[in-house]
Length: 254
Figure 1 (cartoon, rainbow, N blue to C red):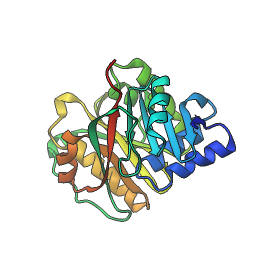
Figure 2 (tube, helix red, strand yellow; figure 1 turned 90 degrees about the horizontal axis):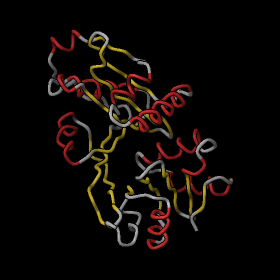
Figure 3 (tube, rainbow, N blue to C red; figure 1 turned 120 degrees about the vertical axis):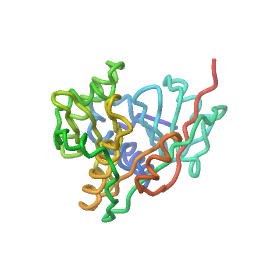
């Protein structure tokens, strides 16, 4: 039976289901550790299952009965779930929507620095610790609720040394940002890379991603991230290695 991960036994089941999982083995345990008390209705566990339901999409590690899983996710208002097909059957009746490729970098390995518009790069100011608010506003300009949640979580993680965010500024405007938003269990989960629209296609985002990944790798972390199909060529070109694949499943239309 799937229950809230509030007891010691349920939390142990949650952590066990996440152990060794790429990306999810960093993001899900860290979220439970830092937010479990303030957001107890977000985390659930079964005998071999961990679920993080922070919105309309659930993140799943481990496996559960497909019928029970489908009913539970529907009851929670979830319209989608990301899972490892090699380990878990999808919720009964749900449809595979898209793959999420896992890319990463072996700890200690360094990628060559990609080409970029050197004049533009030289004109930008590098910020190793940008304020959380402008980062959140750049990432979620039209989603105020998601922006506020992201801001709160980022502040919590950075205060505990569990996240690292870099940025490039063009004057007082945030030109580009990339971050590792879960430093846990030997992994550095990278996400939310964003370049201001007028500056895209000039290489600054790719260079910032590689520089952050190289620093994390040199410190012994394994940089990992999930990639949508349309971005696979971009990360392959930068030199990252494909490590696996998860899938997004969506509930049947009502």
